[in-house]
Length: 213
Image: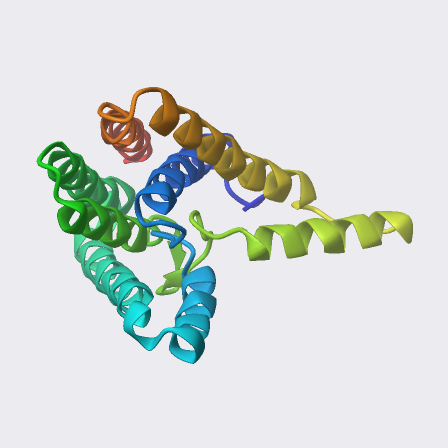
């Protein structure tokens, strides 16, 4: 993360905030399941299978939808060449708008399906050598790097990237807080906030790529 320039880091922070907002709204709509945190859904899948097998269909479908989103995002990223970030964001934006429309039509299936595939796709924004370089919807790696950085500092050794990692985590956390507050205060309009935010981020990504070109 720290190896990126300031423009790319700001874009990553914005996308992480978007992911936090989306995950909070999806979490509340799905009664405690996640649309971006598949480790949590995997745990819920195991618990549901062990305690109430019929409920396991929910996390199973969410995990499947996330994988479909990652696959679609990877295909778009690989085919877009110099505009990979904006292409992936465009795909994610379409899916988030679709989810907002589903929410307006009172279709939880379309709402959650759109969100989970969007969050899978958006993880392809920052890729290197065909693999994800920065995970923008899950923060375990960022917190591990933060802990490693703290250990290095306590030993008097430098460790680049700890600040960028905690900022990325903070962006997702703040997005989740905003998502929860918006869902409670304006439930009918909350799904449209990430839709507009993703379009704004798409514009930022396009400007960044055009400037670099």
